[in-house]
Image 1 (cartoon, rainbow, N blue to C red):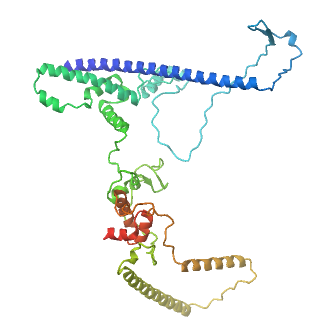
Image 2: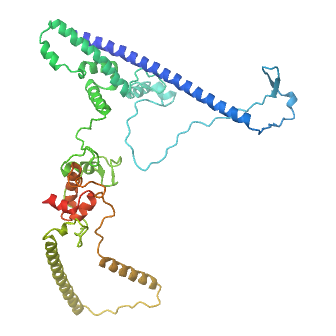
Image 3: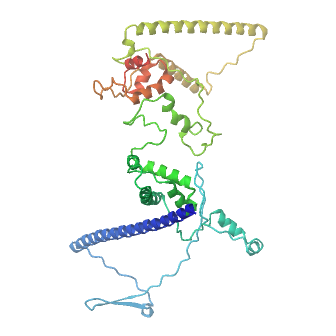
Length: 452
């Protein structure tokens, strides 16, 4: 009984506050319309005054000579008497009615599917014929029930958007405070110090508020859903609040030093491997987007640069250049021995094939064939590739932020620098020059010190 009484009382409060907020919004909207109308009227008067001044100062004159039909004497005429007594008469022309274009819907194809919310209002009641309605009269009723009784054109009495919902909850919190005061009076001042310390100006609304709103507006969801919706809306309205489990922007002022998995979380979870874009609507299902493949993929190796990239290159450190030269010699010797073994194996296979199979006559291509130009182009491209391969790779970046920073700014590793370094180090490994060129704020000497 007590619970039903409280629910009935809260339901009455919800209805009262809802009507008050709707009325306040209606009055506010009317005031805004009046203010906008007055501002537009003033602006229009200013424009008319300016145009009148321009026309009075202008000496140009427009003479209108309309063509009168032959039966003008038989036509009806409109007569206007001016303030000074002058009479203006003009024949009335009837504009024939034009048949309006019927309402038409067209379907336009799109490049991809878009996820939208389900229709909650029945926009069209299909006409199945009198015979179908006579046999099964409950078809229309069941169809309307599927849309919660909402049909296009009905006056919507229970309208409540997100802003009105939050305002309604805040308005009902005053009754929450009144109930607390009544309970304090009944308890006769017991545990006043404890309540005073626990009291806060921003108390969270009690659950009975959401229960009462859910009873009054059942189409808005259950009380638990309304409570979660209120928390989400209030957190969204706070400009300083971050979404839950959200890593700050690596380029923002609040960047933090986080592990590589956390930095790459958005790329691993939201980047579609089929569309090559973030948060695609087409493959957002788990079957099509199973997540990142944590196995290391074999990609094109970017070999470390052989020449120094600048005055602060790590190769200028003591002992680094000698170690790199010795390592390079070992790699070259290993490649030479590997090439020699492959050549010996291929020669042995060719000798066996030539001994076992009869010799074939090779067909020589004519010098005057039509493929001469293509062969020359291919030779030119081969020569170009060989010349490009002989040139050393440029080790200097075209842009850097070191010159724009202070003397001590680039020495300090910020959270953004540390997070970016962890993301790059797994890709480029010991190519410190490439890591420094991508980071733009650190030299490769600082990068190698950080790895050590």
